[in-house]
Amino acid sequence: MRIYCFLLSAIMPLLMIGSNVRDEKPISSDLFGIFIEDLNYTADGGLYAEMVQNRSFEYSPSDVDLHLYYKKGQWHPFTAWEFLKVGNAIATLSIETASPLNENNRHYVTVNVHTVGKQGAGLRNTGYHGMVVEKGAKYLFSMYMRSYRQGSVMIRLVERDSVLAESTIPVGGDGWVKYETVLVARSGSKNAALEVLLQQEGRADIDMVSLFPEQTFNNRRNGLRADLAQALADLKPAFVRFPGGCLTHGDGISNIYRWKNTIGPVEERVEDYNIWNYHQSMGFGFYEYFLFCEDIGAKPLPVLAAGVSCQNSARTRGTGQQAIPMEEMDEYVQDMLDLIEYANGDTTTAWGRKRAEAGHPEPFGLEYIGIGNEDHISPAFKERFAMIQNAIKGHYPGMKVIGTVGPQPDDKDWREGWEFAREIKPDLVDEHYYRPPQWFLDNLRRYDSYDRNEPKVYVGEYASRGNAMFNAIAEAAYLTALERNGDVVLMTSYAPLMARVGDTQWNPDLIYFDKEGVYPTVNYHVQRLFSCNSGDRYISDVVKGIETASCVRDTRTGAVVLKLVNPTDSVVEIQADLSGIHLRTRKATVSVLSGDPNHVNAKDKHLETDISPQVSKEKFSKKFSRMLPPCSLTVIAF
Image (cartoon, rainbow, N blue to C red; front, top):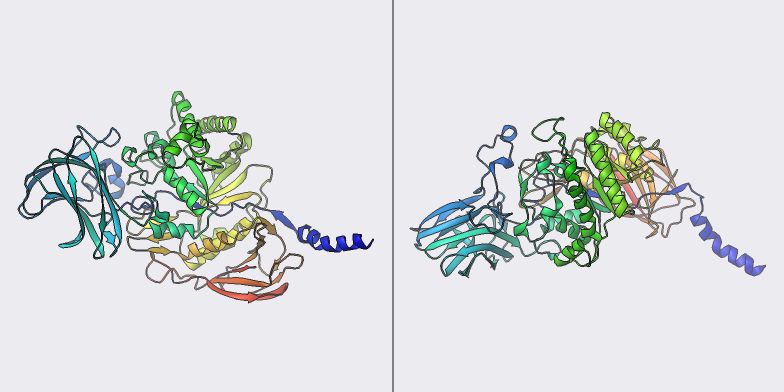
């Protein structure tokens, strides 16, 4: 009897910890992720660390809709390039296509030097509005050249007449040859340019002129800009959705994003324009996306078109949806299956072997795949989506398929999309909404009534149409409701994620950047506070005094986190009761984000906010009261 009492007393605390002393339910551990779309120059000129713009001379006037953007004559094979003749050099320059580097990269430059002069003749590239060069840093240069004479080429980084770094490469030989060198900057500049100068008379063909900082994120070759990638890594996202968005289903069926065009040697990738009216080098392709997910510990979520293009494509609004002909759909569906094999197949499979040849023999562990984006729920869409989903489930029954229900939270496509989803049963349905902040406060109960037996929800794109403090707090309030409904809403991602200042097609965005720096918004701080303090169990009825609060527990770490949002313009008092919840410690990290509801930032509407979370350490009782500042988010993490 004494042994029985001893055992009972020993296990009772454990039974109480795991019992329903408090109403507790499992929620998704993948709730907070990010969505990368090549919009606002997020990839080329942004995350992708390539410093040379138009490195392969493939820019074209058709990349931009001149009727929309009035950039007549801006886009052409010489965009971002200058013809350079130093001193008394005499030379000519032309774009050629007769004998290219490869069939996917048709354009190249031919330089004919008639008189070398002092320093020769060649090209200068100004990058994306000037290159930033740091003193002492190393930069990796490469190019393909077909030189018809033995000689040399001088490679320089310059600012006006000042030479920041230089190196001379011997050239000559049969056919196209790749040349590489390292430039070490003896001076820094915020407005540098790259020069390629032939030092001998005669003809030379040039293509794929490239310059990368040696220090990329995680030191990857063909890698990402370190500061931008780190800002994303700091969010600790559970997943990364890529590459779109509207970019995925493209501007007409000829512009649908094809993942196979984005892998393999960068000089062999098929470049293209995107629906956002600029050119994609595809240097940041599917292989690089998978690597980035791995580097930051996030699950990859590729999204591919559902066999139809965007209904706003073909330079139309709402009526431009085009469908891949049914006789071509078998090949298109096979592309989907090949992607899954590329991500997860072992090295004995054809596409698993291609992944290994790229440098990654281990599988990437793909769990999710998205089919479609904001599509008009037409008969053509339904037929093709069903065909794709059936094939994926037939070959990979464990793969989680994410469908789509249009771009609005309550319109015809949303209603018809859900009717179709109930019929065909994808694992998740991707809902999008861009609404004023009050909409988010008015819809805190949106998912309370969703049927738990129907497909789950991925809120793949949402934003409250602003970067003011009140926008961010309205989003925070809504996120507490999504945590409460984390058993039906399994994934969320704010959109758009990034925007280059001066090259922005869509506002607001989570992070702004330029060639010099990264400027997180106050919305970014909200996202980070939620994603870095997530859990896999939701605990009900912990907080009284305010509706916009949540409490989660992470069973992996034992952490318990309260999130308290006050969207009002007055101080609010709350009462919290943690009785019956096991806490490893009564000490907690307290982060408070608060400020003027109308405050946007410290500098201008595109740059960094000067409001950031104020962090402290506090000790709490199991029951406590707290005054929440107006327009604030308070996170208490035990």
